[in-house]
Length: 404
Ligand code: HSE
Image (cartoon, rainbow, N blue to C red; front, side, top):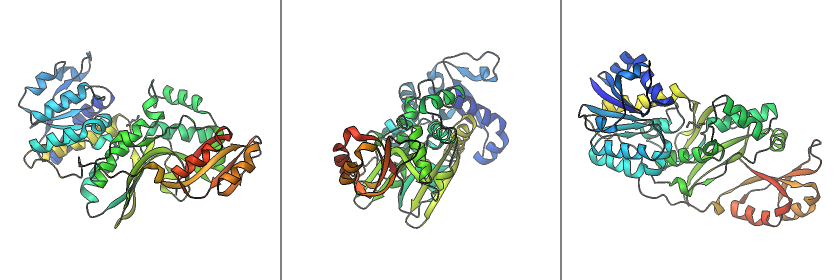
């Protein structure tokens, strides 16, 4: 029997406890031995909950118990979670986590410790919740050069954009609804400003391109500026607005960014609605593949954490499972050189000036928005866009990138 501990009895932690209790026999078959939760660490009490039998408040009980070989860190954050993870790895215990903030911030150091100790630091649940994308990148797509990853990696914002589209509601209204349903946190900043998706694309890109991409270098724009007018223009050109976390590995370097994009109906991400996540991957041999499913929530996320615990258990003797994680910095190109097309909303009175500044493919004038119009530009670099937009600062009402 393999003894394990769970750090944090919140949504995901209680899910891990539930998955292991519910699927005990199946997990034992898959792991080769039963995995038993010997401790759950949390500062709180849970009177009447079966977790009481194994609840502890002091991490040292777990750290100093040589029987504990696998730890699930599902506390979140980069404070105590970092200290405990580092101590656990240094003590030779494998750690499995859903904590994308910690992996993005300290993954380099924690992965190096795990490799030195010949154990595992696994984080399938950190990106895309229950979608097995990290295992696919590490174990299945190993015959390919991956050159693009584009994902809808945040369920909260995907739900909000979907509702804004189908119900015509504005950002503030839909945020309140998402909070009432428990999809958005009381402080929604990490989701709506794109920070959560930014950390996830940093992790996936580091694994896929086998060069370290620091989340702090990723251009990140959230959905707070998206309006019902933007939704109207999107519909007029048969596109949907999606918050995409995207990265490309090009001969001249790689880049990653998070921003709202206009996605057309031929793109498989177009149909990813509600709280679902999806990750599109392009490989030089594979071509296109897309991974779709529940990107958040108690049991989907816990399922991914437990999958990692099973892998850690299978490899207790074999040691570190090979993965693409690298600490060598990626050659990141300047965002100014990244090219694309743009939908630019301008005040109606600026039409002539805007047409003289931008090479315009199409002009959209919607009867319900007579005071403004939108230009669809030709392809240009982000740098060129910035320079041109500077000539029209007071006339631009909004800009959304067009997904190629
Ligand atoms: N807040 C995240 C989301 C949770 O909405 O996708 C899963 O990482």
